[in-house]
Amino acid sequence: MIDAHAHLTDERFAADLDEVMARASSAGVVRILTCGEDVGSSERAVDLARRYPSIRAAVGIHPHRAPSCDDAAIARLRELARDPRVVAIGEIGMDLSGRSAPQATQREAFAAQLFLAAELGLPVVVHVRDAGDAARKVIDEAAPVTGQLHCYSEGADEVPLWLARRFLLSFSGTATYPSALGVAAAARAVPIDRLLVETDAPYLAPQPHRGRRNEPAYVVLTLQHLAGLRGEPAEELAGAVSGNAAGLFGVRWS
Image (cartoon, rainbow, N blue to C red; front, top):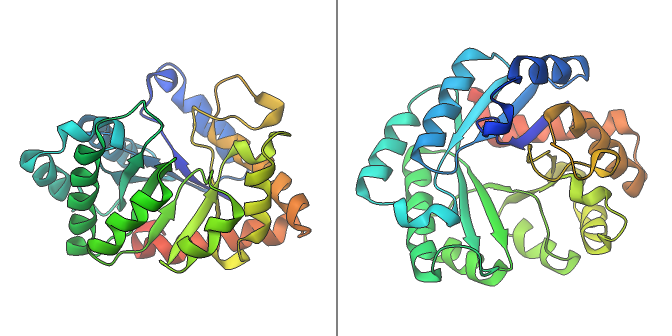
């Protein structure tokens, strides 16, 4: 089993990360992708991947931090991405919820990092919130890339639009929430070979732990819920998403 997206550099893991990792291992989680949100957290993500054999890192600048994406930041991300434990550029993307950076600044940062990923031959880890059309427009106008659309929250009607752009769709604990009917419908619509499962830890814990800190061990609960939604055996789905992650993130993932 894999956790295709987490933020283990978050301060909420500072006191007990060894225990968190031990619980993940006991739950059968063999690989975790921890993602940067700016240069500093990207540096820490790489450090964690060096400390823990089961962790891989993505390096990037989140749309909330888009104003920090200048030439020096891109150069530092390029340097960090040389580490063999870095498997993607991310978390990058667009967020038009009204709580992020100005849209023009987000577009510039997103495009710059898409070009960086293409230059390095790496996939991307993309955040999209209330911004599907805008994000796809940037992707279409920038360099051709593939990647993960993390914590999928768009409706089922947008699934084909992302599949056509060679993205894998990743579902978090929000898929387990009784009110998340659109996310559940989208999870049923994604082909098994284009599906990933994540925690987004420490955020978005699945229903049994909702409102508390999320952690990689809980990805198993989300996977079990998705298997029920899709009418597939949990073991089959776990094997599929693990293979999908390996196919997306390449030889550095293994």
